[in-house]
Amino acid sequence: MTELKDVEAKLVEKSGRQSPDTNTWGDHSLDLWEPFIVRKDQIEAEAERLAALPMPNNGVRRTYFVHPRAEEGTLSFTPGISCSLDVLNPGEETAFVRQNASIIDFPIMGGGKVVMGEQSFSIKQYDLLTVPSMTVHKYVNDTDEVQVRLRYSNSPMLERLKVHWLDEDPPLPGQAEYDVTETAEEAGEAPQSPFGTFQLTDDGAYLKPYEELINPEPIEIKPHQWPWEKVKEELDKLAALGSKYKGRRLYLLYDPVTGRTNGTNPNFFSCITIRPGGIVDRPHRHASAAINYYFGGEGHSVVQGKRYEWKAGDLMLSAPGWAIHNHASDVGPVYEMTIQDMPFMINNDSLLWQEDLKGQISLLGSHAGFETNREKVA
Ligand SMILES: [Fe+2]
Image (cartoon, rainbow, N blue to C red):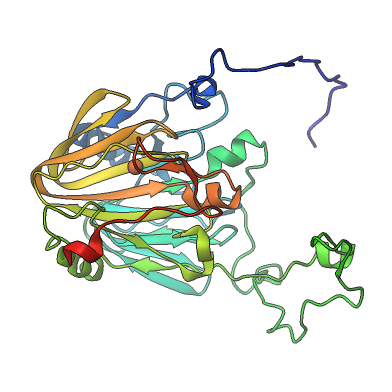
C-alpha cells in the first residue's frame, strides 16, 4: 500500500487583477505547448525497431511519442492525450488488460483483430476502433504482415489527476468478477431509490439522496468500429463541395451515446477530413487540443504564426489547446484523421471555440455555436 507523508497546504496569494492590461482576452494566462511533427520515416523506423525486439512479457511492443514538455510521470502527446505506436508481429497476441482510460486504435499498417471479452473486431488499415474504459481486451495479429497501430488514450489526463488505474491481471471472460457491465435492466431491477430526488428551491436546485448518488443510471459505452472503406465512400462525396464552401470537409466518427458532446467515445472525437488541393482553412482556435495523422497528400499548417510542412505518413500535434491555427492542402487530396479532447471539454463546460478571429468566442455545448455557408453552396 502507498504510504502517505504528513503535509501542509502552501498559502499562495493571488489578490487583485491577474492580467497586465485590459486587451489580452484572457490570453496572458496561456502557456501553449509547441506543435511538433513525428515524421513518417521516424514512425517507420520505430515500428521496425519494435518489431525486431525479443517478444516482451505481455506481448505489447509500444513506444509513446512524448512532448518534451510532458511532466514527470505522464506520457503526454498533448497535456491530456497520449499517442503511442503499437506493433504486433504475425502470429503474436498481447495479454488481456483493462484500465480506466478511453482508447482509440487506428491501424496504419497491416491488420488483425481486437478481442474485447466475447466480442472480436477485425481491423485493417485506417479502420478506427474504440476500446471503452475498463473493457478487458487484447490485440491479436492473425495475419502474415506486421500490424502497426496508433493508439490514443486519455491516460495523461488521469495521470495528472493521479488516478490512472491499469489492471494487467484483469478478470477474464467466464470468471465471476468479469461481467461488470450488466445493465440494471438485465439484472431485472431499475436503478431507482425509494428515497427520491426532490426540488429544494424555486429556481431549480435539487437534493439527491446518497442511494442515487452511488447508483447513477448507467449508459453502456460500447466499442465501435468505423471501417475505412465505408467512411471513405461518404467522405469522397464531400470533395464535391466547391471552393466557395467555408466549412470543413469532414465527418465526425460519432457514437450517439455521447449526445451533445459530439464524441467518438466519452473523451475524444475523431474525425476524418478530405481536403482537395489548394484549400486553405480560416484561422480559428479551440480549447480542445488536436492531433492530426495525415495519410494522403501534403500541405502545411500555420500555428501561432509559425509554419509547419507535413505530408502523408506524418503525425502532428497540430493545434495545442487555444493556439490560433489553420491548415492548407498543397497537394490533394489530403486525408487526415484528427483526435481532439472535445467531449471531455464539453463535459467540463470549458470548450471555448472561436471560428472567426474577428468574431466572438463561444462556449460550445452551452452557448450558441457557429454556422457554415453549406446551404448557399449546395
Ligand atoms: Fe482546429
